[in-house]
Image (cartoon, rainbow over all chains, first blue to last red; front, side):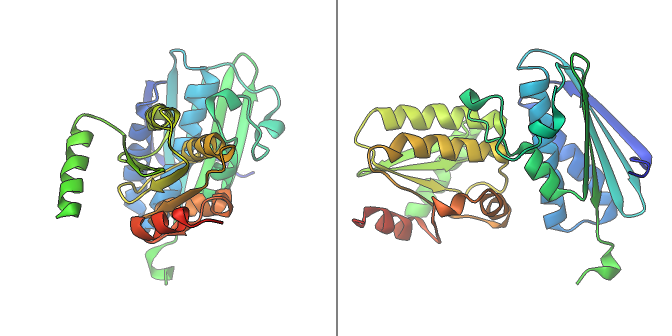
Length: 149
Length: 132
């Protein structure tokens, strides 16, 4: 995979609390606005960010306190979103990414988080180390206006 | 007039930071999320809906999405969980007021196979009342 980041960096760090999921979505959507995205592209970004941050809150920190870092960069017509936590980490990333696989059926997790991130972005990379934390990197291409229908 | 009354109620409940409005019509429980249905709001929607379902006399569920423009996989979990609750008593689920954003999620998750969508409440209620 090519260099997974661009320039014009914005970093936000926030507490791993469920009420910040909406905040993170808004920040990412506002950042993406500079590339003139369509409403659908904005919705894609909001959904992908929501899934990544929710995973960090529920699984990374298991509902306990912690800090989530979201780094936004851009290159040409691509937005790069990096969401990382220093939580428990994922032992088997490939298994975690299987659609409908969930470790928390008790919380009614649908197991579709990674599937949604994959579906709504153009590239997804997950790196994790047990006991150290997880980083999710996503690239979303924003169709330049002159090429749009 | 009916709609204005409902809109006022929605405003009031939102002001109280309530993320869902539940309303019983016969044997149908109408569940109307008021805020973006993510993990944060899912907990409240689940708790409130389950309270109403457990009170009894509820057979079918109708999810009214007309007040929200965002839902993620947490919403899928909420719908599936409530579906399982009514399934064993012969209940069905339906939805209405689905906008573009929510539609993407429902389509991708395959939920339409168990939850048919209707343009408005009245037609959804009619479909749920019909014997199958």
